[in-house]
Image 1 (tube, helix red, strand yellow):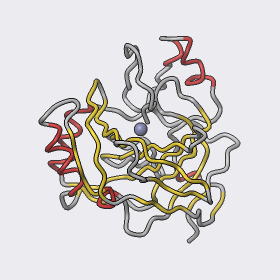
Image 2 (spheres, helix red, strand yellow; image 1 turned 60 degrees about the vertical axis):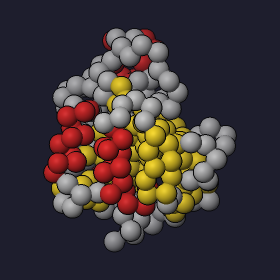
Image 3 (cartoon, helix red, strand yellow; image 1 turned 90 degrees about the vertical axis):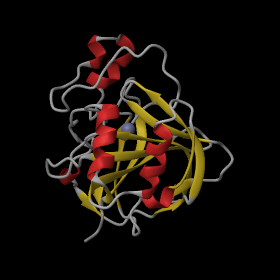
Image 4 (cartoon, protein in one colour; image 1 turned 45 degrees about the horizontal axis):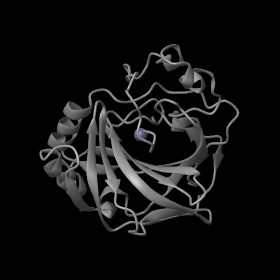
Amino acid sequence: MAAPALAAEKDWNFGDGETPERWALKNSDYALCDAGLSQSPIDLGSANARGDIEVTTNFGVASGSLALADELVQVNFAPGQGKGMNSGGTAFNLLQVHFHTPSEHAVDGRRFPLTAHFVHATDGGRLGVLGVMFEEGEANEGLARILAAHGNGNGAPVTFDLDTMIPDDLSVYRYMGSLTTPPCSEGVNWHVADEPVEASAQQIATLREALGPTARSLQPLGKRLLVAPAE
Ligand SMILES: [Zn+2]
C-alpha cells in the first residue's frame, strides 16, 4: 500500500515481485524495509491460527478524486462521508483506495491479477487496510467508474459504489504488518478478504498498463500471528 502522506520525489520502484527490492540501499530512511520483522505482503497460506475476525464496513457510494503518479492509481476520498470499517470494535476511517497488479498478498504461492487496498486510519492515526483480490470475470462497476475518470487525468472527480468492490460476505485474514512501499512503516492492521471479487479482462489489462508490476516481494511471517477465517 502507499503511504497516505504525500511523498517528496519518488526515489524507489517496485521490482519483479520476487527479488527482494533492497529499498534501504537507496535511502537510509527506508531501513525498516530491509530490517523490519513485521513487513508486508505475506503469503496468507501460512496462517497459524483460525478464527472469525469481527469486521464490518460502512461503505456504499462515495466521492473522491484520482491521484495518478508513477506506479500509482489511487482515489482519495473527500473527508466527512463517514465511510470506514470496524474491526474488533476499533473504528477505522476510510482515506483512500489504490491498486496493485498483480496482487501483493498471495495464497499458497498464488497471486491474483489485481488487488485493491482500502487504506484507513483511526482517529488516533493507527493504520488499517482492507485488501480485496480481483479475479477475471464480469466487469466491475466500481472499477468502470474509476477507469472512466482515469481518462480525465490526475485530480479527476469520481463517485462510485464501494460495495461493488468487496465480497458480499466479508471474511478476512488478519495480521499486523507494514506499508508495502517505502518507508515500510509497521503497525498496520491488515485485513485481506478470503474471497475475490470479479473484474473483466479488459479492466485488469487497463490497470496493468497504467501501473506496471506493482507487487512487493513476499516477506517472511516470522513470529507473527496470522489468523485465517474459521472453516
Ligand atoms: Zn497497497
